[in-house]
Length: 406
Image (cartoon, rainbow, N blue to C red):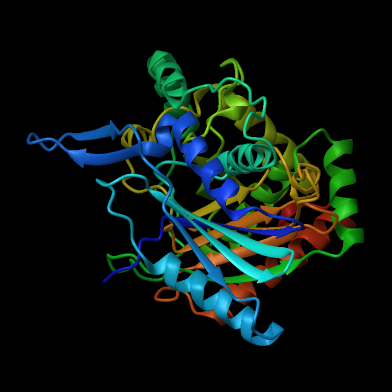
């Protein structure tokens, strides 16, 4: 059976006194609070997809005790459990499309695994869910705020100005010679779980890039997109490239949007024209301006944007900057009653042959997910190393012309 690449996972390390029954009850309450987590998806007789929300759905829950194993055996057992759980597909027509596994690793240590399908929840949502789980574990009558329902997001989405968005994307992609393909051959159909190569930038380089971004009023995300564009341009020998960017999709004008649990993200094209005579920093500033003009139009679906461009599939690589509303340190502060979150390890993937993800921190973490049936590990590793060298060149002399960067 094929894997579903859109099965995502979150692994939390929990240290301190934990009541498994209370945590399980908290999971049920979170499902009751967020209707979207009780949604299933099926097709009508006409073939039209429909979302159906069920009442009275309980959270699938299992408990595993590995506390009797040695550290090496325990680590291997957790890795096996993660892999097997990730490989277990959801039936989209049978909610809930998420499940919990509580792993006991010691007298006062546990690992909580949340496995979910991306169709009901994006990466921004899990800190909201974890915050509520921990609050409910500590106190059944935790004063949780009112829920902003996912349906409010959908209503806001349907009220947006489609015509203005179509015009903006048509202008942005005007004259594009075609899509940017990184894959040497079209990947075969079917879901192949990606492999991953990753690295951490040195703290000094991370700080220099951050200072550069602040000095020129560009975001770290723009800096990363510009570097990826240069890498793609050299790779495929083009001075007009396009790739996908994962955007939050959360309209700040919608009250409570930050606390919605649901799939709000969108993937939109980023087009970068490369002028060899332009300085690196000028390219980044121009890219920031061009992308800023499109922010209000991130709600338009990718299929529609590609139809407007008339170039078929526009890209086969994407870039994500994981700027979630809370980091590991923020979650650690949520501990109550002696229970602390001491580690957070999210895992998700996409179907693209190449996907670059940046995770901020004192040392910027860069990872490239690659389809192993399209790019082997050595190729992905070489790309990652070239990207790091490019970022070093940016930090060293941002005023040098793009065409002179090796």
